[in-house]
Image (cartoon, rainbow, N blue to C red; front, side, top):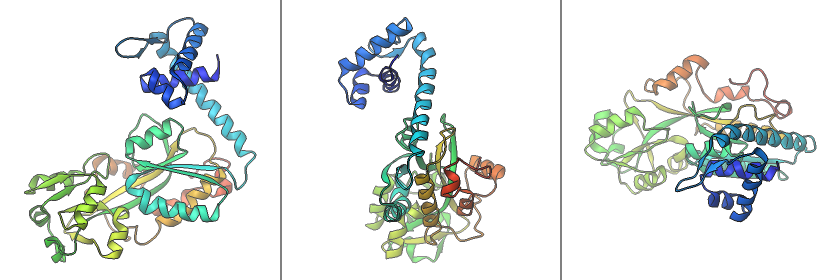
Length: 345
């Protein structure tokens, strides 16, 4: 068996197509077919049932977990060898939620590039599911995604960040004329209420407000920000995402009586993925500093009575999540040896 055969087998199983696997590997489809044929000869049987749809045979299903384990071990071995030879060099490959890429990761990366000019950096952004796929495929070393995260991928949080979710609108919006509003006023005056998915699903409080509202529109956060800035509607945004607009005064924050919403995010890695590189550890320290900026963090002492149920269960097990937990992240010299005992579970 050859490495390129195992890689082709794993990619075809993920893509469900020889042609898509070939495109992802940047080789021709005949080359991929030849690799699979050679692998099938080595294991003594067909790995795929070819037809209208491509699926694994029983032999293929039994072989796949071992192939993926072998590829993971090889990646860890290459990374361990690389770490033995790098100092301030190396690479940092980060994936981030789109809602955090600009307000948090962008300034962090700018500072990191200034202080570590010889480190190769790559940032990719998207939604929660895309972040997990990048980790699974080994494209990203770490991903900043929503937390807690229910996933088939076993994850270890390196850094947990809590940010407020606030109601915002244009300064001349009817809601902005009130110093503090009620839920009923939000439902009545938003016109429309912008339903934004800043968690894995719509928050139940937002869903209830949308049901009570005369008009509500489900939009992506980028579109929602443009609508609000144009004076059309009001919505609940993560503060990091609209921090610059709030600072410039193009959008204003509106307090809602008895409603305090938060979102927890975490920089995560795949569990058992080997030691943290010195470059990634240094990046985490810069990220921790940026997350502590007053414009991004909630005032101390704020409670969160309307968090999702499973988030409450997580907080009950591990204690309140906030940027203060960042002091549990290892320093660069410690991280190079792996996560210490005091790291989050």
